[in-house]
Image (tube, rainbow over all chains, first blue to last red; front, top):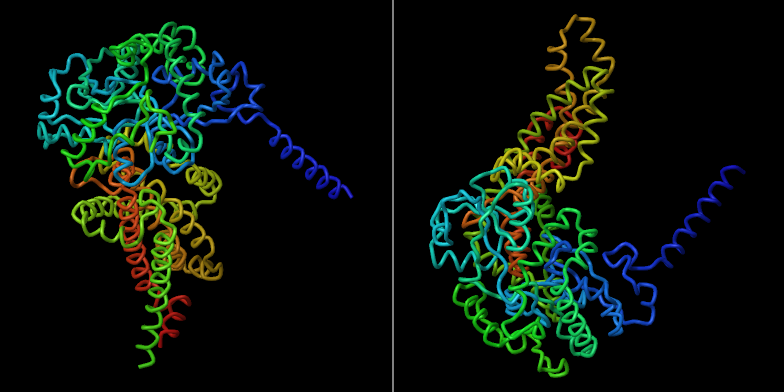
Length: 341
Length: 267
């Protein structure tokens, strides 16, 4: 009898847990937890945005739009998912697993060349924010000197700028190892070199007592970066939603860049590996990389020339065999989503 | 003649099964029109294997080296430590639970630490292969040696055999079938361990190991190359597994029931 009662109680508890889980707020555990309008999301259009990295100031505008209810004002319930080094964002969005994801410009063209129906709708960084970081005392002071040295460099395998730099400078003596995203090795190894986001790792290293210098890649490879992409089918079927999302995101970035200190505490709470102080410094550094020459109102915009030159560069360095027409690779602000590919 | 027919039947069965799967896969990809970056067809993978053979073979050699060295180290550690644990009840009580916990530690979490301790390149890949491959050998050795016939053990004791003699002439030979089973499991795991190690420590370039080839291909949206590299890593694992099986057959075929039975079945 006792056994029967225990089984009965266990079964009741299991059913209770299942129903409890069913009724839970789907955003409860995600980065959106605590967003002011989370309770009102039932009548809104749900959207998932997959980040390609952990929450950092490079995504500041997205979190500002979330925090200020800009997405909700556009009728959207946006769920921002944390990413990481191994999250295949471009493939996820091209296959329709998520409607939006953060990718790099070159990933858009590479995947399109392989048959993926991926479209860029918003480009966060107008200037490539990636580069290589070295200890301040390292005698290497240019990309050419670095590529002609025998340094060991932490790089994400498959990054297209490797082919570009190899063609330009050789690079036969370099030793490339996987980039872990962590600073531990860099901090303790004086001759260490690793790829970085100009606004992230060097700032964190400095705050931990190691002065780093950065060799920017933008001079030799300057794609749009932290690009928000969707897939063609989603864009065709949900053009108004995409436009609303882009509008709110643009406003979010304008607000974030005007006052990053207001929004960084919420981002820092989601990313314990980067201090609030580092985030505030990063936000200042990224302002000039994000804001176009034409002004803040044009944040996120893309041009045909930039996409064309990127496509040509990828073809020239044999990263892709041929570039699909770039006019279908991005949604320019003047072009309605209905006119999209 | 009967034996030849039997051999042909044994080879034909897996060949037919693999051919059927590949044909069904090819037809499914062609009929569904699924994009190549999601699921490439077997023909596309074959073409990629041919076109990228230099890169893949170079990578497979690197991975095979890391897997084999890691496997051999795991085998030696597993058999020696397992024998000690089996022989000393105190060690069995104190170390065996620790060894079990070691098996449950996720390798992907340990691999970045291995890079910090051992540096980039082959040493980390070897260590990762050893870490995952050691437990099956250890567990099999312990099980094999504690299961030795107690009558035979008493017989050795009655004749005043030393612990070394008992291990050399009774415990180790009697546990070989169990150890071979553990080694077979470890062979496959060693390849997985080496590739995980390469994910965090492998050098890029023309002779990059398969782990780096897989990561590079993922970044380049070359799913065909990912599949090709996975197929080659399976070949490496299969070769190691085959070598262990041959070794096991040589060691037990003349005297142990499993070997004798398989010999008689093949007659």
